[in-house]
Length: 270
Image (cartoon, rainbow, N blue to C red):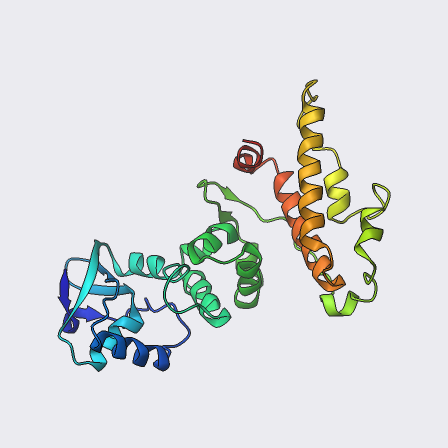
């Protein structure tokens, strides 16, 4: 459907990018003028207004060419629904998102009274970023009290956050401490790195009851696949990269051992 540009609103906070790239607008305009066909933009119609949720560079290119209409996909929904759609709209198409674009998308959801109560995981899924990225942005933006408030997970359950600890030193500061060959890490005795991801993988699962006769073999196969993946991914990587990945694996271990997230067990061992 072609919608008049005059009816499309772009001032409702639905722009998820840090800024409009004028070079991209010019490129799109030239392509349009040459006959190129672009995908339709995405609009949300609340009964009175068309809110632009995806296609801001195409919209500005059409305006530059003084076109009166623009092909569009129209969804019935509110301005707020347009915002939620917009934050993840450019994950797989259009101009590649910058880190500033991703940060703005996360900030848009954290600025909402309802969405700020959602878990980092839920916000990360909407914005197409990592849980860790959302956590960093949230910590920078929120007050101490709002950071400690319970959050709602994607399963609809509200949970109180665990006690926060001081962050580990930046990788650059611990580079020398971990500047060892990967083969040394692989050859270490189980438990030699107690407290890190390796120890977590060796630790028995909590509160899972007695294992059946077939479970040890299955656990061994799973651990072998994990070890193979880690070695293949980290072989030849510098120390600071291994430290970051170890921290990430520790977070994943904490998630898998958390009995309040039963869906993780289903996903991991389905």
